[in-house]
Length: 249
Image (cartoon, rainbow, N blue to C red; front, top):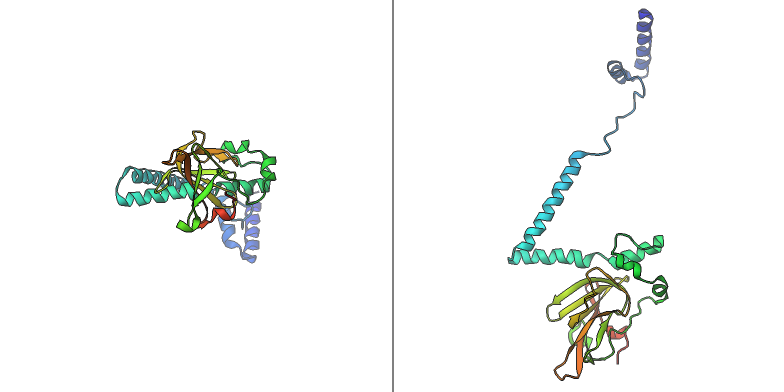
């Protein structure tokens, strides 16, 4: 029996040598693996070292951002501005939602839950790139005056409404504009509402706003009879004359 086994191994060795695969056969003899000699060993599906490195880098980035916002130096201020811009402006929430719904027919679950309140029929009925009036009033400082936006004169206690549905990407104060709200729309444009006397408490950062929903109140003028606010439309780094897309008095 032992002799037959030895003869069998020699025959197998000779056959492998004739096929040019002697090296893999030797390996199989020593390891006891006689199947799939030429099969390559597959690497692990999960690499613990890479995963740990990714976690460490994430922690470092988080701590770095925290240090930037705790520091009041000029360099830190630039870093804060960059981080805020990345989170507040660069991601196109409205465009992402529109693309997802066109592809899959239902809201993107990762976006704020407020979006589910948007009536589909109403959104479908709106024409592309049409805007409602933010408030009833007249333009008393035109787009040509500053190349960015317009100033509107309204009633003393008028509300300022959204001109089109979208996501709130900024709430706060901006230089020369005071209280400001910025809405991002699905066509990539932004509508800016500045010089507000107050911002409605229902307006939250990254919340979804339907068209003609109240954002805040206009600032009363010194005459005690009228109010005013700033309005602008922007796409990328380019400002658009609102009077060309919205009819004012």
